Amino acid sequence: MTAVSPESAPLFEPFDLGGCHLENRVVMAPMTRLFSHGDGILAESAVDYYRRRAEGGIGLILSEGIATSDLAAQCALVPKIEPGPAFDMWVRVTDAVHAAGSKIMAQLWHTGLGRIRTESKDPSVLSIGPTAEYLLEGSPQIETGGNTPPGRAMTKADIAAVVEEFAVAAVASKEAGFDGIQLHAAHGYLFDQFFWPETNRRTDEYGGDIAGRTRLAVEVVEEIRRRVGPGFPIGLRYSQWKLPAHYSVRSHKTPQELEAFLTPLVKAGVDFLDASTRRYWEPAFDGSELTLAGWTKKLTGLPVMAVGSVGLSGAFRPYDMTEKADPDVDLGRIAGMLTRGEADLILVGRALITNPEWANNVRTGNYAALVPYDIAKLAEHW
Image 1 (cartoon, one colour):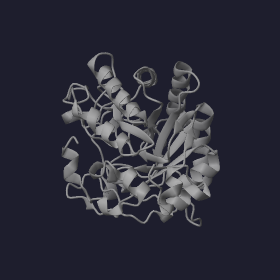
Image 2 (cartoon, helix red, strand yellow):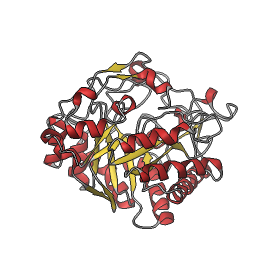
Image 3 (cartoon, rainbow, N blue to C red):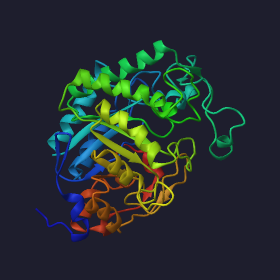
């Protein structure tokens, strides 16, 4: 095997993630690719897309978001994992990834009020969320980050249905050969709409304090664990920042609030956490240099993934159709986080769009082979 370059060595040590053995610490971040033709069935080209990244040396792949239902999908082009051709395509993906020597976990996704209703399978159906409106008119948050169209507030029956659809999708993921699942509970989508006080104005047991706002996610994790049994990793991605462009938001304003948020999720059965930020190195709270990943590790002791502009010179700018970024080959900072135990795994996102061989090139120090990221490549299934 080709020698590992010294500066990247910490990235290429093996790791055990909830019983899932990984050959290295480099994880492909979940990225929305819209690899469906509007029927929830993954496009044929997606099999090769995932296979190429596995062959490129990634230890673990987190899939693009998989909608748990039509109502959950951001738009009609998001794939699902229901019985039939949609399930069969994911089997082909997991087989291809495993044959290439990597592992793959399914990211399960409900967008709630973040659904693009006009581009959904049935635009006549209202989107759902903890309350009918994402942000109330007059909220100062709207001025800095925008709003989403209103839908309808979820009933107890809606909540029960969401718990069920996540559990069904998790079982299907296990049967399709995935090595675990991750719940997308970040970036202003359904779970995050419950987490954030600005968007969860409920007065029942699913609102109010931190425990109430976390209850839906806790119930989903508990039911998934009951259905899939032990030994099948369950992860959760969370964030402070929200879409559309609420980059400066802190749902949890202190380490104490963050601990109160994370503790019930850990007790429910979460095996690993993905602390999603736009710049992985930024401090999470005033008065401390510790990152969000670092605080997550310190407060829970669970395996933690660090993410946010790894391998690129520019921070993620969603909805910027001109976005480009040069490779960043100064890996000392991210390697240091692994060495210090501030994070266990690193997530690489946009850099892998234009560099399927990113992990192999970084492993050997072949940085000259890395090419810039260009958002135009998102339109290509390669």
